[in-house]
Image 1 (cartoon, rainbow, N blue to C red):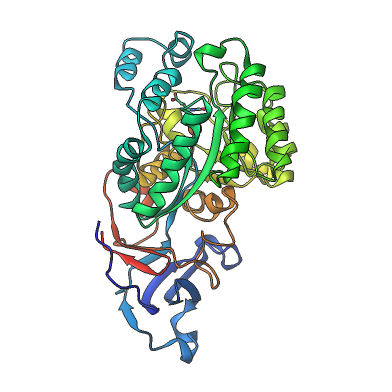
Image 2 (image 1 turned 90 degrees about the horizontal axis):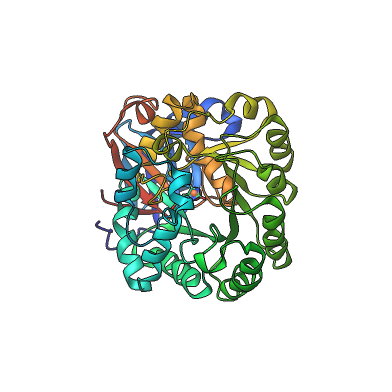
Length: 413
Ligand code: DI6
Ligand code: FE
């Protein structure tokens, strides 16, 4: 991946068709014949070229987009990108009939990735994650959320978060971290979730926070993981140090996790196949974004669809993400994620595109900074070789990215 040697102080992107994703401009926030002016890495104008204030033109660099479509750079708001090993063998076993829950209860699943992750150094974790990160970036992604959760002891959880932060220094990308020690119970704490929370999850959170490694606190609320009451203790810990929360909820059953998350003002509740109307309403009221993860739905051959119509009726915001993880979603393509969201979940074009831009930014609490083409935000842009936005969600396996811009800097494909 090449980076331009020098960062131009000012640039002007003209002759573009903009899908700004600004809600006040109607579906996709489209501006035909648009221009985007950038100063010091930030958007100072995104609108009709005809209305461009004269002091913003010329610029150090003027780029003729030749009528190409521009969107905000894409955001993957739910990944487990940093981890050791892979679970191809488990995939093979599932092909022979084993279920995800059976594998998890037999000590496979998450726990096998925990072993592989514990065995690696920070540098090795970074090296393992980079190809996955690069795959995302090549499709126009500029922000990636990365969770811990395969360490399950304090040192290894911190190691994962340090690796995640390191990625930001090695690539032109914004990394947002989530502390997910409450992902699974390690074998040495089997049947003793409360002790695991006391000994590892909460003290590890304090340490990680003290080192500036945590942007939010996550958990896996499920029969095979943590109960709502247990998650509430973790969330109390997050609240005590002023960190926002989010939750893997209602993925395999309905335990009321989404409602719990909403009661803590969570940024998002994720998965949600088994969510009920009560949970959707509680999320809408709290402003908690529903993050749908079609890669896990697909990989697990889930048949229970997330209640999309219920979410729409409730007015719950919807984002979509890869859930990139070695067990249930070995997926490193947001374009394919959008296609799956459309075909499997019947999300509209607007929902798919907003789901990887504006709503994904909202789910990470960074909508002020990125996620739409709007003056004041970071100049995180994606330019596409397409005739219409629907092509972004329609094709399977074609990457039409022309170029990506991160904080005003042009990144060659
Ligand atoms: N839900 C998931 O789909 C992943 N984690 C989670 O809480 C699966 C993690 C794994 O199987 O490794
Ligand atoms: Fe996940």
